Image (cartoon, rainbow, N blue to C red; front, side, top):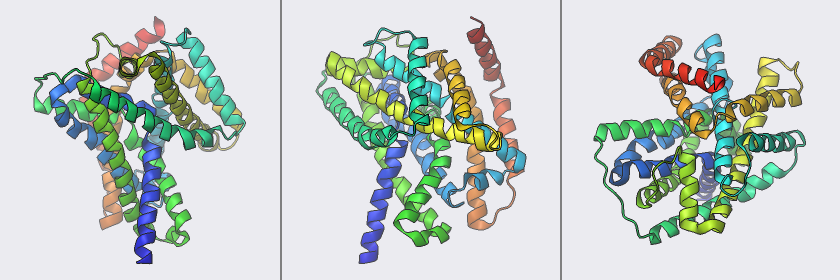
Length: 401
């Protein structure tokens, strides 16, 4: 009985921690946009979205926990060079080339109606604050982590109630079911939660070992418990996504919005009024700040330790990461979101293939990995070659305008 109680306590504690880790402000806009796009077909769209935004991350956490949270060992199964390339590629996406600029862009879009400042000026101020928080090792990240997730949940609860009282009705969508599921699954890629799961797995293992010291020598048991914990945490996240998709479907939104971030801003102001919208914007921006501080720390340490073998100071590595982030951030949120889609559609199949091969290796002794992963990557590039050409043209146009 005592063992069952301890197991349930650990399940709930770590499950809630998993929910907090994956519950990022940037993900809110995709579920809202799902409802706006698909209206009465939103339940069908949620099938594709939850498959890639919830189910895949659960599998990702489980797979990395099979390697006791060691992402180096996880990627090394693809071979020394392929694994190193995949590690660098995923961290680049989670860092200065997609996730971090997207955070800056969303923060700007949320505050822009209330603060008259240019994108360049906001980016500079936001990243200088990020730098200060990282190098001073202040307690701001702990404080943000402790208070912002509950504040964000309360704000969303208020948004749900306001949407429930809103008089508008859900409209009609006439897209084919296959198109709805496929395009919503791609939207789920954009949450980046599957890529993040590879690195969060080590945190889950650390939490399990902290609550049960003997668990450090039991990777198989850890992986099973991690599967249950991540399932609980991401099931809670799925409920948030379902609620946001319903808000997006029920609330009439004006046409002409250039990106999903503007939808979040508009709905906040529409449902909560000027001051309520400002409060929502402040909470989202603080949540974004806590996320970008954590990402900047991880990327700066990776640059220092892995790429430069300790020959570069941490603050110099941090400056490099933030300068790259600033460059991409000034493309604007709409461009960042648009340009990230073909990148993710190429990266995801390879990472999924590696995850499946690694699970088979740990559970049934399957050996072959490298040829499968490389084949999937090359096939993804081939299938996306037309979009990659458009991507290259768009990049060239953006940097020469």
